[in-house]
Length: 347
Image (cartoon, rainbow, N blue to C red):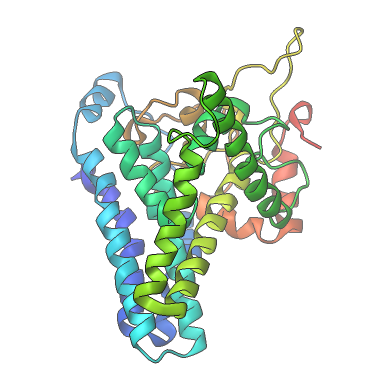
């Protein structure tokens, strides 16, 4: 039964489904669940910082159930998106209901879409990476695959990394800098990859062009089948989805800086360069994303066997709660700034 605990990640799509079906005030049930109920549960449930024994990790590593729990997100996300589009374009909704469903669908695109795509994007098989990119498509964030894997993991906790928030930088400022800098970085990385393979920008191997084409095609098909209202719903849901991702990026590396060696190069990424949380509810719902230091320390490790490191900086609250706190910059700075080692501060 313990292997099935990650089914809790599907509680968010389930709550969205209830909101779509019942409408009215229930359209806001998902943000209430994600950012009120879950944080309360995280305060109630104890923190679990235990790690698996080597034989336990080896056993879990070969259980396919953990992979299938990721794959299941593809039909869930797309099925829910289709149902939501059908509902908002065939039902007379109040403006507040439309907004509530956009926010709710955006949360699914962020949690069950981009977050799962992040895990699958680190896998070695082409099929799994394909599923990851498919989950990035409705969030209009397919370039994340390139920038995250070939950019962020190389530059994390440095000023060169678009996805690392600076000391005293607000989450609102970070949204703007990270979104645009990551997209520019993805193009820069793609160009370098093409040059290394002696290919030009118009090559069929230019994934950034494919991502742009597929995302335009997606929005075009949505418009053709669901009209301008469907287009608005898809577009703004995507914006909510990737804004949610960027809020997670913000809290994951806020203010942490890798030091430079005598040779002038950055030290390698260590367990101390990411914020972690061992609050069990957030760990399960986010497929262990909150054990972020171990993920950066060894990117090939699957989510079910990620460890907690004592030397990793620990967040006082879970990721969902921390995301809410980040929306109130003075409160966030008061809580987090004093936890950052002074020699690591990014100013």
